[in-house]
Image 1 (spheres, rainbow, N blue to C red):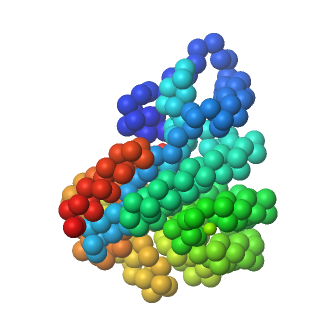
Image 2 (cartoon, rainbow, N blue to C red):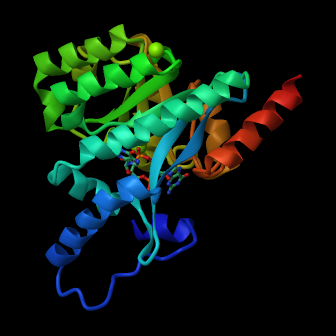
Length: 282
Ligand code: C2E
Ligand code: MG
Ligand code: MG
Ligand code: MG
């Protein structure tokens, strides 16, 4: 989390005078309630590059909190708290609403990128959330096909029947489902095989040294082969240099995402990138 804060240029500073973590957490959550209504919660986008075409195929929505006093507050600091205090639903719907609005704008301008939203596993199967997603989609001119839900492996996904039914529900609406941070959880590819998924995102801890460490290379290569056998697309996360990107291309990874390609950027900066790409292709 500290690293993420540094990357965004401003250090997270612990407010002075707060005696312990609990006190800080309580005040942070009170502030989050207000932040959801006052524009402090922004969505930035990180491109996923299609390695076959060298074009941006998709963008991942990453939530950002610009707190007027605390400064940049990275998601790792408030997402887990929001999950524990029933605020993850409103937060995610805020992100999804922003993403649908932005995606509608990109489509109107002729950019056909899909948008990925991170959804906490418990929320994914919550009836209220499912109903809210249906309603947002019905009110939007953006089709479900323009969305990807990224979900991490977790205990909530281990209730197999519920997981399958939930994923099928989203699939019927056209929404693709991606398994995020793949390799860090306990699910095996044989379990993954049973789920109606579209995409696997290999965690950056396996990806980052794959071009220089034979054990990581073997892991990533075999994951890609097996995923393809199962009909899944593969995204490699955390690409930080050219050699790593070239290696992933050579082993037929489908998509790549990482600071070397682009950091998460504002919607304004993303639009500039998309327009530049379209102009270069014209
Ligand atoms: P994630 O979904 O796995 O997102 C990838 C994280 O890795 C992002 O951190 C991104 O900025 C960072 N990253 C991307 N490329 C690189 C790279 O080349 N090197 C390194 N070192 N890092 C890279 P971020 O934005 O701080 O988000 C952290 C986590 O917070 C996300 O992990 C996701 O689990 C969660 N998150 C973010 N936005 C949301 C949201 O709207 N809803 C939910 N439920 N979770 C979210
Ligand atoms: Mg993600
Ligand atoms: Mg619609
Ligand atoms: Mg990830």
